[in-house]
Amino acid sequence: MRVLVVEDEVKLAGLLQRGLSEAGYAVDAVADGEQALWMAAENPYDAIILDLMLPDIDGFEVCSRIRGQGCWSPVLMLTARVDVDDRVRGLDAGADDYLTKPFAFEELLARLRSLTRRTPAERPTILTVGDLTLNPSSRAVTKSGDRVALTRTEFALLECFMRHPGETLTRTTLVSQVWDFAFETDSNVVDVYVRYLRQKIDRPYGSNLLHTVRGVGYRLGEEVGGAPSHSD
Ligand code: CA
Image 1 (cartoon, rainbow, N blue to C red):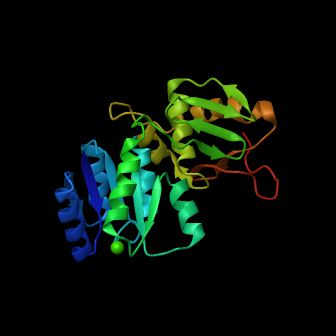
Image 2 (spheres, protein in one colour; image 1 turned 90 degrees about the horizontal axis):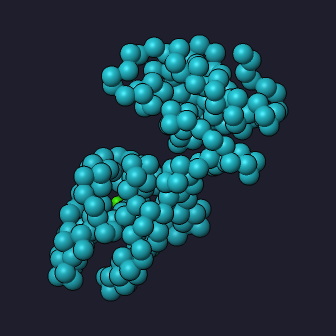
């Protein structure tokens, strides 16, 4: 069993590393979110122990990004907070369990055993915006409960939007995330594919989830105030 410990408090990180090694785990330890993302992408961990408060990116963000990278290692989040909102946010971000500091090391071991007993099958977070859902694992898209058939490129573009709901994404960003390096960078291709997507997820439903942000790019999000904000 290989475990990644993400904890910036040196003393606690040391204790965890020593205790887990003694309990028979192979342990890697890092002290910030960026390193955690890198390590999680490079190594197939049986579990990740992730502190919420980190010096750079917080544990919520780390968790949702590693899930975004397609890593489904069980995540046990450590937090000094007891706030219910934090627990909910952590679970939404894809964490599997929570442990509030201070904790007994025995309890941490028990939680780890429980997490690593579960099937390591993919347990993707289904992305949802309004009545639109996208399952990155099964590659299924639904709108108002109907299955929507998308081409590979349309799916990749929609997934990119759904991972950044409410954010305006520039054509350049979209091209770099959806089309590979070899692609001749022509931002018109984005406009073309956005039009295809609208014809599948908005037009037939009279909805307007995919907005044009004039002079900038596009944004996926629910309408605010109900007024259509795009025209083409
Ligand atoms: Ca910390």
